[in-house]
Length: 75
Image (cartoon, rainbow, N blue to C red):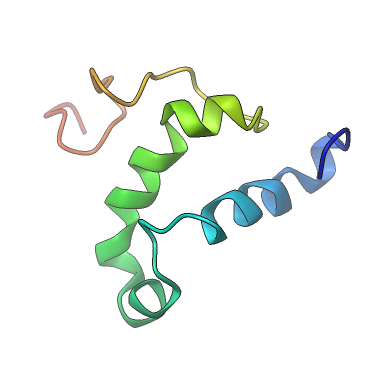
């Protein structure tokens, strides 16, 4: 929702962002949310999330994988 950045509704903005991602097909998420979580975390740290100006974006570039990213070895 352009121009609407009320922090109390941040989770709705993130949900809208994730819902629109082809990397997270709704059927696969519903069937196995735990298996889809690593993909969702990568998306949450991706340049697309930064470009969407989502609240709480952590600044990881999604490519070099910070210590918070799945598979970084630092989990």
